[in-house]
Image 1 (cartoon, rainbow, N blue to C red):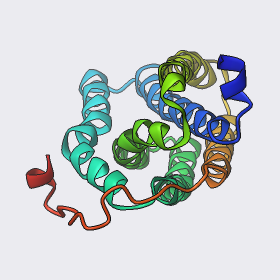
Image 2: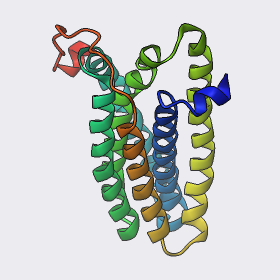
Image 3: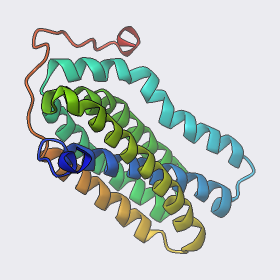
Image 4: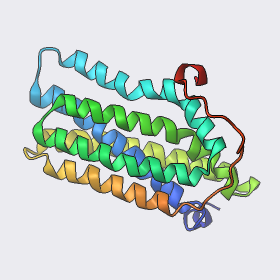
Length: 210
């Protein structure tokens, strides 16, 4: 079953999209933490690390509700493509931040990645019933979770290693941009879905939607 899903045109693009996206999130987050702690060695490094965590997590609290509404109102594949296209610009901002050793730029890009991740979260799970049979759903969910945790592990290792062992952060910057493009290309291959609730009015007030 797992092998069949991984080569399926209806599931494989989503699997790749989620893997590349989660890997990029963790490359950026752990690379930023390593840059603060090991390279810049600021006196308020601990506070900056905590701030980075808050910046990445806060959008999930504020925007997940809106992400769920968008997933119901519109074609999930279309929203995924648009979000992952926007992620390329967030990756370019993070690349500039690593190249310039700029914490403000990296914090800003981390917030953008967190926002895109929060809006994409409901889509990556909500789209599974549109493309998989009922008996395939447990396996599909398991593969998505496996992709996420594998990406977290690799991103944690590579992000920290790149900053602490390589004097030039240009390769890390290029990898983040390259992964964002791969993620967008994967999203483009996700088959379109029907609008689950075409009459739904998306709540623009993030506090009300949350």
